[in-house]
Image 1 (cartoon, rainbow, N blue to C red):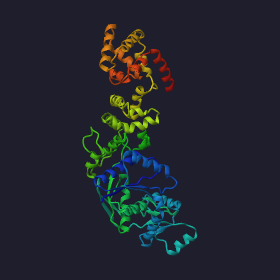
Image 2 (image 1 turned 120 degrees about the vertical axis):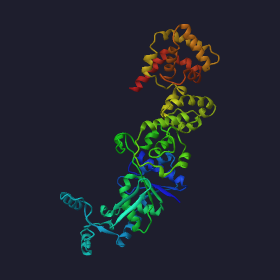
Image 3 (image 1 turned 180 degrees about the horizontal axis):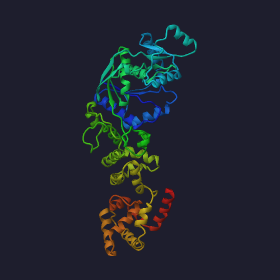
Image 4 (image 1 turned 180 degrees about the vertical axis):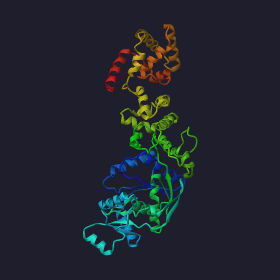
Length: 484
């Protein structure tokens, strides 16, 4: 059975690159009907935190990547790593190293000054038993280094193909530090063995680590898993994605109103594609179509415009019932939710959502577009006010149109439109004069869905109440003060 793992370090937020790695592991496990394991690599005690662990798990669950086993915390397995390192030491596959960082740096500078390339020079491997005992009596605590055997390691990467490394290029790397804490190489191999990992799917910045870890598997008498190294995500400048390109935290995009399925599609389609890019795929479709063989070797570009396009399209295509799952909690946070929206007023609320969702880039936009329908606490666009409500004719004509609307017994879009156009014709003005003014007066915006459908859904009472230039002027002052 396929068994994969996602192993983040809780030293920071879950960024989009790590989230994509988790997603590909999850997709592979689900496609192969295997197991997806979460492991928290928190041996860096000074930088790891429980809070970051929780944030990472929160991000995975928001994206829909529930794990089957775990979370496994490396900090609770320190004794196991120590025992494994000592086993390698006793087997003659590792040795103690008493070199201080200062001593290593001095020797490194000497080698480089002569034009050489430094790798650890096995100084401590050559120590006699007496010399080692002397070091210990001096109070030196030894680290444990792996003794790299001669030869060459070759493996077939499922994305990059065959990779071969001569062992002369690999130094005797540290397994256990002098403080008893394991290095990444030791802990990851021990954990992958204990978890019976069959495939390691991770970023291709780990390719240089793989030969070392294969040597460790062999030293433990185990068969290494298969490896697949994902091309790294690049920023628009084609350099490795980092904070200089803007916020890369996954939950930042959640808080900006991005829907998880949009982010799922966005991440999945970086280096892999379930099909044509001009559509949104369900998670089931992506699981069914996923294949490591179809992942590109080329690094994808983080294109925020594409994420926003996917999100906008998803909101437009989602049924109101589906949108409500994500919209309701956000409205509750802002104090805008009313129980009646999903009960006696559901038919009306659904019509409003269907009307405005096509013009919403994210949930924040959607709530902003929804506010004029459910509250008087909405802003007036100052530019729209200056452009469409300063027309002197409106002082005389708007009350007449308002009177026409008052006389309507059936306040529905066709009747509203017929009434408005009739008044415009009688006054010898373009209907657009009223239409633009009504958008700003009733919604605070210069752009909206069809104004006649908007007025019908606002209702006669709200529409008439907002057709007042003095009220709009007061609201504009409040809006300007809030923006400043």
